[in-house]
Image 1: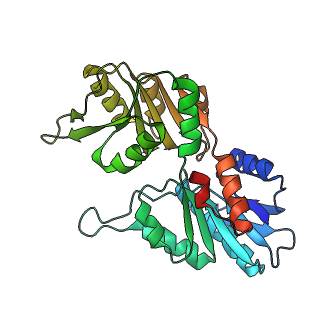
Image 2: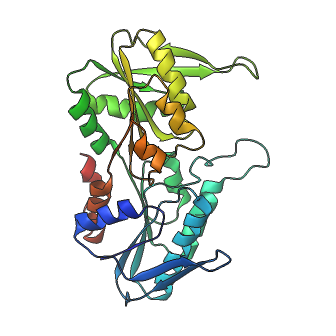
Image 3: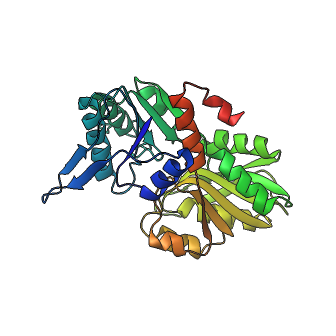
Length: 310
């Protein structure tokens, strides 16, 4: 088993390598003057079980190209098996046609990774589970619940908790967390009555006097989380905390979270944190490195990955 990493999230890759007590394969991943990606593997990998760690986060296209070229370089160097470890799978929100003449980009990216030469994919909390079916190679979709649940128990163990799905589409995810915590579930139903008017938030469930946990897989602009927190407090919630796996946090999201009614937002390190995220007082991070490291170990030894979540 050997590890290789690109430039998308070096701190997470370092943490995974430390967990596995393995050095990185010597390689160069750099840019030419015109910003073309160049990869050179600087040691023998013939017959090796290779794991390439690379999130396809911002800038998504650059990091995706790095991943594809690293996989191609390993294939041409006769690696025995290549597993693309993608903590955050970019383009996952483009998993269906949202209108006429629009692409299904998540399927295109799956094809690119497969054609580049990957034999297997390991990722965390896909935006839609059916994206696993876009790949014609084995795909393991890990759940970030274990580290998030531990954080909830450590910080909010004595509270009267209630898990909240910020929209109808996230109910399955929220229900799974509520079952693990042994608590109740409520749903935020958001709708826009007319174009140009703000969304109306209706809360399905009684949140009076409860400490609410908003749960989602991706927090991007932060608008949904902040609006849902305000609606929950208006409906009698005691306090609102948010938990999300992938902190995309684009544009003015960090400032929006900082000025919101949320007590805190907890994200994982699947995407490398910017300086604004690191300095925001009500954003905390938990690591998925042990989860990914253990999954890598089990894949390499042909052991069960699903038993990680039993």
